[in-house]
Image (cartoon, rainbow, N blue to C red):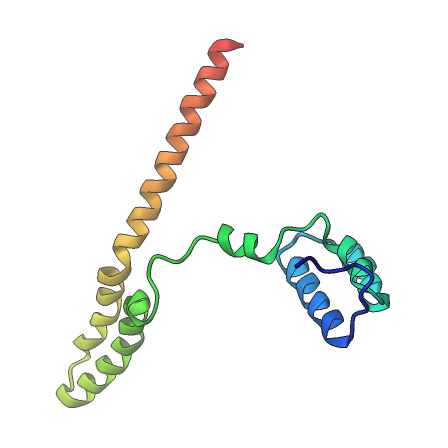
Length: 145
């Protein structure tokens, strides 16, 4: 059933429209001036037809949700290296007092290297590949010029 543009709206509909407008502003689709202008129109809206033009050039919320890629990992296991690293200094202090050996503090950077070293290397390799692709593209342009 299609909504009639002449149907009057209430406070709840205006607030919902303002929330949608705020979401678009937060996503960077609107400048401050555009947001101010459109929010004034929504605040003064009396019918659905008054609100509809405000969102005419903005994507639907369902389109926005579909366009955002889902995170591959979620939950507790996605952040396990960070969680382990947060506990390592505490364990090192406890072991220091129990064994009276300062060598346990060496476990802190060691665990950091073990847990996060592979991530750093992957980032570097990706950056190197992007740089190589850019060099190849530039060489092709130089040959054309």
